[in-house]
Structure formats: C-alpha cells, structure tokens
Length: 177
Image (cartoon, one colour):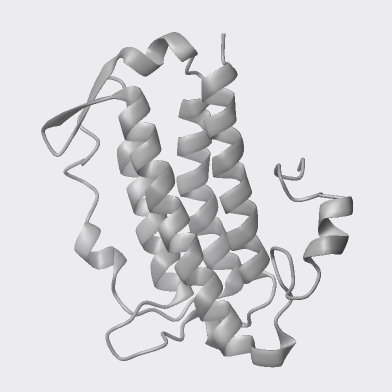
C-alpha cells in the first residue's frame, strides 16, 4: 500500500512544479543573480538541492544519506550557467528522489535510515527532505518575484483572486506531466 508515500510524493511534485514555474520566468542572468552579497541565486539553490537529493536518495534505505562524494560546499559556489544546464542539474536530483520514492511502500515508513550518522525513521527523513525542498523553493520564488517585479506571473493564487480561485481550486495537486 502506498497511500501515505503517494501523498508525500505528490507534495514533492507540487514544489518541483513551482520551482520550474520560477525557471520559466527567468533569463540566464537572473538565475545567477542573488538578492544580496551573501545570498544564493536560483542556480546556486538548484545545485544545492540537486546535490542534496542525489546524496540523500541514492541507496536511501541502505547507506548514510550524506555521501562522501557529495561536495556540499561546492554546491554554494557562484555560477553562470545556461537555463538548459540548470534544468539538467535540477533533473539529476529529482530523478534520484522520484526513482527512490516510487519504490517505497507505507510499510517502509517505519524502517530506519541514517543521515550524517543520525538514525531517522523513513517517514522522518521524507518529511525533513520535503521541508528542505519547500524552504528552498520558497527562496526561489522570492528571488524570482523580486527580480521580475511587475512582470512576475504568480505560481499560486494572485492577490485579489482568492474568492474566484475557491470556486475552482486547481492548484491543490501537482499537474500531471
């Protein structure tokens, strides 16, 4: 049975779609632009999230989620990349995550995994990872909205449109790709 795992998987996909909605609105200069000198750009966040997802979900049930090959510090380097390079990096991490989550059942949620030598139940690791994804996707949205200004296309309910949306709520689940 996959009722709980499927609901977690759907939330991952909702956030994946929101981030891709940011990518669709930015040009190459913008994806490399942080909002402050010590902030991250969208491209930096993509590198970080991809590295995190690949590390955590490669051999998820059998190996520590912080792999020795990860190179977390390099994920935060400033970078100029093409939109295609950024999307390819993004897809690498998500492919590992979604491939692993697709194999999990609700019975697996009680199993134990390890992240940085710390034991966690599978459900704890999934919720922790989902919160991490949500945090960084929210940062991407803030960066995108700030950089685009008036040209920003909302990824959720635009201001002043709550009543209309509530009559036809279409964003409660991810769109099927």
